[in-house]
Each structure stands twice: as structure tokens, then as C-alpha cells.
Image (cartoon, rainbow, N blue to C red; front, side, top):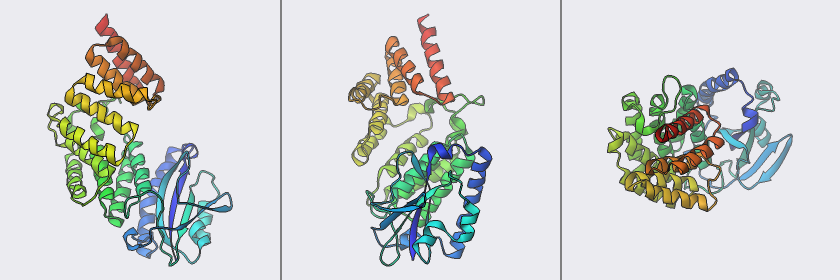
Length: 356
């Protein structure tokens, strides 16, 4: 019988792992995947036909039936496997030798397993035909959270390649393209001293052009399908930046048009914020500021530091120094990442210098 096994981890518990422990987990993934594939126990998602599954969630020695393998609050998908086992207990817990190796460390991921009549398993819930959006989202969160760590971003891209291999659909292709394009700019995002450098000010000669070219090719492939979703669209937006020889040559009208489609396909306040910034670049800071103020007035993104940082930048460009300072201070109060804090502090210092 075949089972889909999703491994979740609790963010706070996972954060207790030391760097050597994290590195050991990452280095173990690739040979483990290869061994499973060679043994025939790691199966291609495309070979599975059923779209529903009876899903069981084991935790703390108990198993409960739930409606779909969904992550709970404070959990992220760490990995997924489609395994073949004689019975459910083996699929959930693995062979005795595997259980002895894993031990009882509470920081270890717990799993969700699902099965259907003939043994094929698929995740349930809101999804595009044939897709694994929750796994894709987990992989993208890995690369977004690990851009300063080339080992982890490389692991996220490796997982993205596996998704394309197992599930060659537009969203998987788009996700891989998006990760490649984001990661291609990694070395240009910060100075040698670790200071944050915004996209417009980056030295584009530092971008990984081979990785960028692969991402652009994959964007074309993703958009060639009869349907595509938010990852392919976000990759298309990243491609516009990658194709521009310099910041001034960026086709902001095209980016706004793509965000118009994203707003329809995957609406969220963050997408609206990104579109507002693009509108500001196309039509001027006042047009963008009006849209950001409308988002904040609804009560959305009030605790999202990038919304206040974007508002501050537009106020600065409009010469509304007092408003810019208040928004920068609000963003600074919501930011915990040191590079971002130093960037906002520099902006505040520049405002003071200009008014001195």
C-alpha cells in the first residue's frame, strides 16, 4: 500500500536545534532521498491517481482522523514522502530500525499519513489540479528564510527540483523558477559588512547570471501551460527584474499588470502592498501612498513592518518628513532582524541630516 507522509515541525522547537544539528539534517536529506528512490520506496506523485484520502494524524501516541493533512498554527512542512508500506503503522512510524535511529527527541517532526482504497494517497483540500501547494509553500518559506545561508537556500532549490521531477506542473515549475531568480541575487543583497542593499541599489554584476537564465527559461515554460497560479506569476514578476539591465530600465507597467492577475489568483493584503509599491514606481509616490494608506485603514498589515517601511519611503520621496519619520519608527519597532533594523536606522538618520 502507498501512503503520503508529510512531516511538520514546530517552529519554536525546531529553533532549539543548533547549527551543527541543522547542518546534519540538511546533509542527510540527499543520500536519504537517493536511497529511497533506488529502493522503489520513493514514488512519483504523477503516478498517483486519487484526489482524496482518509487522513490520520499521529501525535503523542494517539492517532486522530482529520479532514486533510493541514499544518496547524506554528507548524511548517519540513518534508514529504510517498512511501510504500505493508500497513499503516509501518507507514507512520517506519521500520523498527528507523524508529531506533530517530529516537524520541520531541523536536523531531511528527507526521500525517493518508491512504485510499487501492493504496494510492494524495493530499486533500484547496489545491490546483494535481498540485501540492502546501509542500510548495513550505519549500518557498525555507528559501525565503534562508537567503543569507547558501546551504539552506541550495537545499530549498534541490527540493524544488524534486517537485518538478515528481510533479511537472506549472506551479512546481514556477516555484523553482521563483527560487532560482530570488537566490541569483543573494550575493548582491548585502554589503561585505552585512548591510542590507535594496534591489534598486544592487550591483547587478554580482547576480548569478547562469542561475538567472535557468529561472527565466523555467518562467517561459510555466507560463506556456494552459493554466498557472501565483508561483508562476510571482516568478514572472521576478523575471521582469532579472531582464532589466539596470533599475531605471525596469518595466513597472508590466509588473503592475502581473500583480493585477496575482490579486485575482491569490488575493492577500501583502500582494496588494506589493502592487501599491509597483504602482508608485509606475505612476509616482502619491499614487502608491494612497493605496498603502487604504490597506492600513482597513486594519490590514498594521503589524507588518514592510508596510510601514514602504509608506515611510513614499512619504520621504514626497518630502513629507514628519510622516516618513513616524512610519520608519513604526517599522523599526516591528522589526527584529538586525540588517533590516540597521537599514531603517540609517534612513531615520538621513531624514535628520536633511532637516538639519
